[in-house]
Image 1 (cartoon, rainbow, N blue to C red):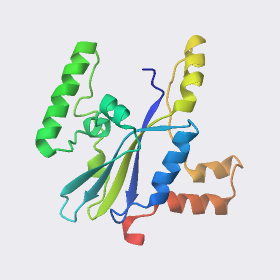
Image 2: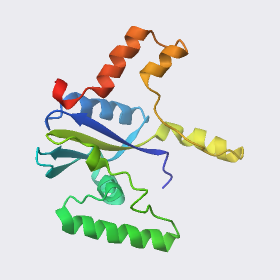
Image 3: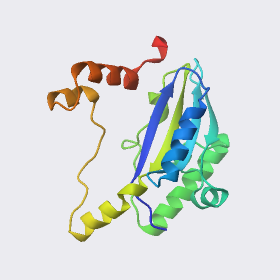
Image 4: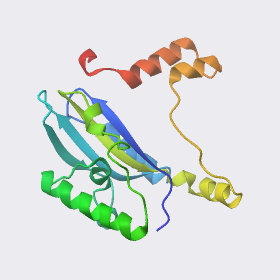
Length: 182
């Protein structure tokens, strides 16, 4: 299986009631072969910090079997609680050892769950950028390699004249709305 560049996006919500338009947009992107949702989790974090998890996905059954619960494994969270997390961690460590891969140390790990505010919800979506496979292959064929990547804040786009200050402020507010402001 050839897999494209993969990105984990964590989207915050004041309540764990995700709307159908998000799933519909992910389906549209899938139909156009722009992205594929490898895995997705809905996380509700109570005011006491207790975490509840539900699986979300638009994968076919065959894809789900092939890819497994990838987001949970990446962030160290199992659908089946601590037992599932332990089993996933052991399987991941074994697969990495067999493949000669280095795994993240605890110091390197991105603790996504800590970033979700208590009393809120999040959707953790692991996307494969299928559109980028030919570009990645062309870069590799030319001897190139990825140095870094990241999203650019709308506020930074004002400086280069791509958006107006008003547009940037609106986009920034949408992207960074806090749980308490809804």
